[in-house]
Length: 70
Image 1: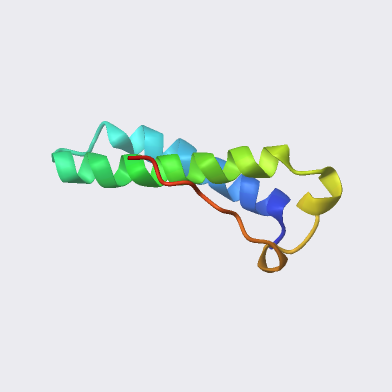
Image 2 (image 1 turned 90 degrees about the vertical axis):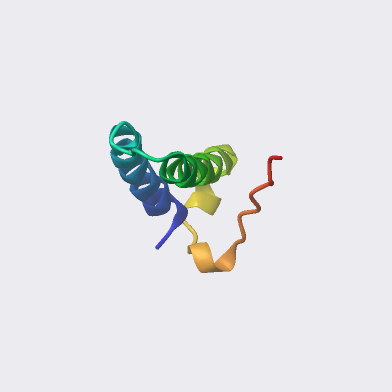
């Protein structure tokens, strides 16, 4: 899998997660889903900043660092 396909997969997951957020009934469920949404969004923001040639490379050759927000 390269970064372009990872980006597309993240976008697909984000659409589903955001649509499902309204159906979460507990605070913990909403929090878990919100954290995953934030994680995927951070990944996509980092991928969007990459040079085009890098986005064609395999994701196992590169590490995305997601900063923790407290």
